[in-house]
Image (cartoon, rainbow, N blue to C red; front, top):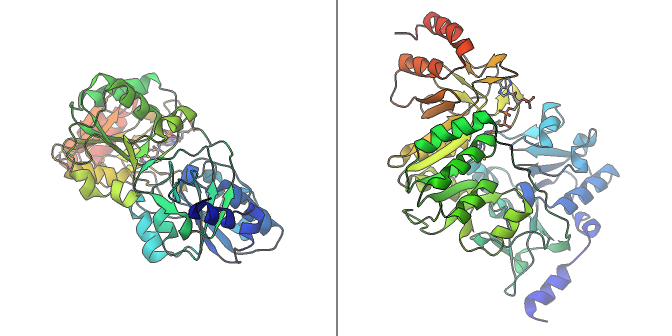
Length: 434
Ligand code: COA
């Protein structure tokens, strides 16, 4: 047995043994989404439930598993801190049982390096290679920063985690203990593409030139855009999240990364979530590199790509062009994620464009998502000065370089017809119809 194998065997332990090393009041950090050390987090929650521990916080950017610490009553023992309240964390935050960290995704590594010190870091990783390295797999965005000041580092090794390429690895010599847990990785079903998604996707695809580098968010519209882009040539991928539609774009040849100014012939990403087919595609694939989010979402790195295009969704937009993409009024719905990072990066790119998409209405056409003012308490995600295009099923409104009055007119023109009159009336009252 070689040196690294010996070290691995020495550090191998059960989840219960490992979590005994966690003290009360510890700040615990785990990797984003599929990088969560689910077996260790569950064992820690069980220990906290037995009253052996109090005051633990469990920081996780995006929750894909419904573990014990999310249950009612656990908040006094092991409180969840969410950075993006989709999935299972949403209800917990909305009910006041978990806390929320407002942030740009690109800043999360800085938060761990400079502002919040993790005492314990745990992550799911792929099996160790012959040199003693584990890959952070499909969850590379924040892991190295989270572990940078931790007193204890625990790895949950899962053979179902793809071994990905890029810069995000951890060595056996750096860790305190290893736990083996070969559970299936959570899979995300593909959001269905509606007729409206297809229309919006087609408006956007028309505005994307061959050779562009793209970032796509998650959801029906980004999926529709990915489908519509299959007829394009020489596209590049530089996207915080790697999505299912990107596998199709790479396999069809529409994306070949041949025109990128940096990382030519490589797709660049920070995390992935999708189907097992996607995880198999990413396993040992040198064409897709995973890097830390403060690199991938760095606006200056995004700006190095000419013709950069970003596509993300929003909840509502007001008539001056502010977008709320993360709350329903004051109620937290998701998070800023990388939306602003990519809107700003695309804004700095030569001939770059950013698209913020929304259906024109919500709740069976009873609510216009284009509003005179944002709903009271809404969290502004994109400011009026950052926003470029807003796209609904009624068209694409270019706001950058437009006056307040021109913006109001552009936005009313892509609102649902049944709301255009009242929006025009409100715009006049606000002196926006100059
Ligand atoms: N008023 C009232 N309700 C609204 C509404 C509005 N203006 N807009 C949406 N809703 C409701 C919808 O009707 C829906 O309710 P339902 O579930 O009961 O049908 C719910 O809110 C979700 O809306 P939907 O448009 O389906 O959201 P989504 O799941 O497509 O997510 C965002 C859209 C904007 C929340 C999501 O893309 C996001 O979090 N973006 C920010 C982060 C980001 O872009 N990151 C970068 C990419 S990874």
